[in-house]
Length: 359
Image (cartoon, rainbow, N blue to C red; front, side, top):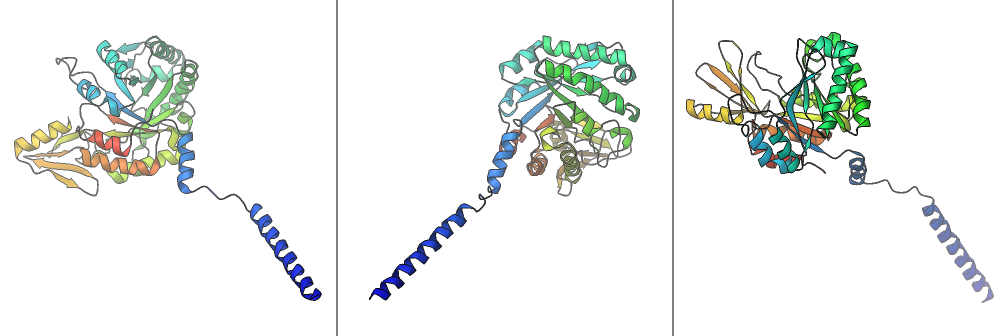
């Protein structure tokens, strides 16, 4: 009887020690890793609020001020976070030529849209504006002055088709501009050409890593793979589009990338000669007038058709959705539509669904 009690006590002791060992072992296990969704939430918390920018062009000459991009801006403001009005160009003497519109300014502000006006270059002024140190500083001071006095939210530098010799000059321009804009608490965007399957004479002046150090965002102009003087073809085929998105994200990080989305097309004469810019409405009306059958190229994800001796490629809601599906894989900081008034209206619900803005 006494022996069986000893055995029982020993068994109980062994059981208790084993249980304590198990508890201690569990306590020393590493904390479980966050689920993929949790990591995604952590990353999104570090990213800037997602932007949807609509580029704004003034009405065409001889038409009322409320035409052009104005109707789209008013109608679809709820889907946008900002507009980029095409208003300023840098002159040889460092001054800014302006096309400001008080109506557009007041309307955009009333709709709660941020404003990042574009400053463009004139080919005959480029050597001085970014190549001459004195003119460069004067241009920059005038940019800062107009942005602060007009209470814009920032600026979009849009210097295009720069010779490769200006690569360092463009970087120097942004390195001088950026700290002055940040001191005024303003956002700096620079538009740059894509780098993959683009000739060096077009893309060579844009040093992504250096520019990213001196800008809040690089807006990648992901369009004109086929342009007015090229052979006919899609403006932004999806394989080319994705290669360039990936390159930008891999090079400077998704948080710095604003991806351009085209809303227009071209009508080329088949016998040669430059193509004419067409809006979505232009393309649809012309197809209807000519009895042309609109086809959809699944390889490039773009609509097109032919009539008489012409070939037309353009963008619609389906081609826009295809680009947004690509962007969902890379999660850039924003998108920029070139330009308001050219688009099929049905792209906006798709943007709301696939790439909604964030406040």
